[in-house]
Each structure stands twice: as structure tokens, then as C-alpha cells.
Length: 203
Image (cartoon, rainbow, N blue to C red):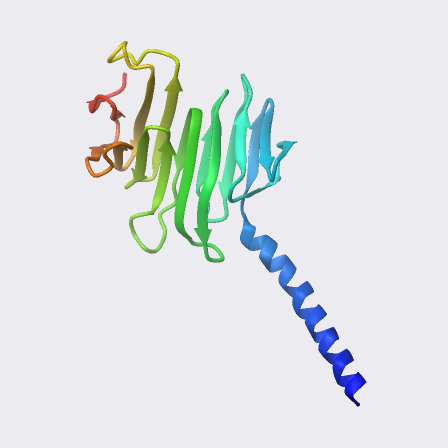
């Protein structure tokens, strides 16, 4: 009798573990590659892989594009990241329920990144893009962030490390990482360089 109870308990435990595995994988996967041109790489757990269409994207993944490459990642909530050539970013956080984003944080380490953010049921999205010297917090739905190093800023030739943010739809709050409380509200159709608090309408 005791042996039968023990076998039943082991079987129940095995079923619980195997039935939870697909769900755990689904929670780790926050999006997938939906478009790719040229060569793009993914670094996950110390391994580097060639990105391909439909490849799943997880939190803590590092994505990079080569010269003349372009990559689009679509998240489960419908939001998109579009990486231009010679760019590098990390998915630092993308907290979701089954279909709804609760919080997102993307690190941009080089190049250009365009974000199309789907508004959730909760109103203003909690979606941020961080560069080594700036924080971009979304108040709208479509914007582009660029982090440039080793090339003079057009507005100040002595500045060789800067971030620019262009807003296509909505409003984006941009702050220098050294003083995040002093954010600039960048409106639709404008560009900001937070290092110089420079805002203008793009040509």
C-alpha cells in the first residue's frame, strides 16, 4: 500500500514538472524576429547565434546588426523594435501577462533603434530606452533613439558621446542619466539631444 502511494506521488510530481515546462518557456519568450535583412546576431547565455525569422526573443538577450543590416522584433503585445545597421541593444526587461505589457526596458548601446509602442489598457505605457548617457520614457507610441560615440555632436563639436531622440507620434520624456529628474518633454515632430537640451523640428 505504501509503495503504491509512493509511486502515485512520483507520477504526480513528474506530471506537474513536465506540464509547467512549456509555460515557463512561454513566460521567458517575450517576442520574435519578424523581419531581417543582412546579418544580425543574438547573444544568449554566453552563446552567439545568427538571427533568423521567427526566432524567439527572451529577456536578457543581446541583439546586434552588421553593416547594411536591419532587424525587426515584434513583442507579444504587438509593440515593435526596428534596429538599423551597426546597432546593438539588450532586452533588459519586458514584464508581461499573457498578452499585456506591464513594464519594458531596452538598452541601446550603439546605433539607431526605432520603437512602435502599442498602448495597453492601463493608459500611459511604461516603456523605456536607456543609453549610456540618457533615459527615454515613452509617453507616445512611435519614436527613434540613437546613441553615437566617437563622432562629434552637430550642436557641440566637443561632445563625442551623445544621444538623440526623434518623436514621430505622441510625446517622449528624455533625460540625461546624470540628472534623470530634469526630463525634457519632446513633442511629435521634434528631435532632442539631452546632453545640450537641444530641441528642434527635424528637416
